[in-house]
Length: 215
Image (cartoon, rainbow, N blue to C red; front, side, top):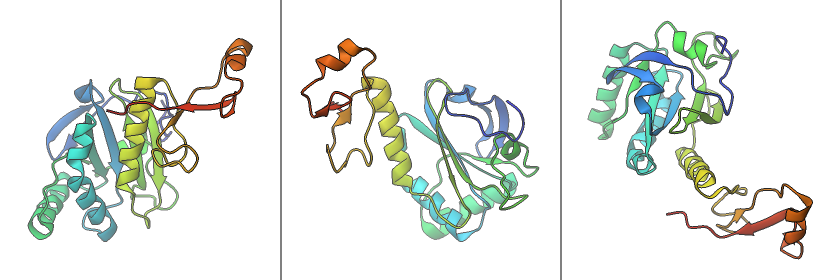
């Protein structure tokens, strides 16, 4: 994968060794068998980023229940990250339990395509969801001015894990879809025979759904 190109969905997450507030980490090797969310933020000691880290920290156990780890990143130094994490713990009364990648030269950010035209130095709010085999499964990009919805990231992980487990696809706003509630959609039929077997089902042969256990 060339430097500066965003890794594509379905590709292996690029191998790299990074320096973090928890020591050196090899990606994706050190998270083998686990999912992880790597998310970048424009800078330490900024209001929107602080609210995001507070929310990620408060919901960390929900990610853990999904066999998912969190990794932050910005083009700040390790010392800056440590000072900011300590400030959050002291003033907001929450511990940041996940590592933050120090990337003062921007090498990791450039390799992952996290620096866009909005700024030549600061990372945008990128999110990479990587599965337990090291494959990129979902990518989100937000501008600097808009904080992320952490519940949506959790929802996406739950949906991806259900897709893998049950071989289905999920509708809009799952599990609160306006048409079929918490049910899921059957994949498209692969043959005419399969399509004919679905005739008469709501809504049609190309749009059928079912219930699955999520636990």
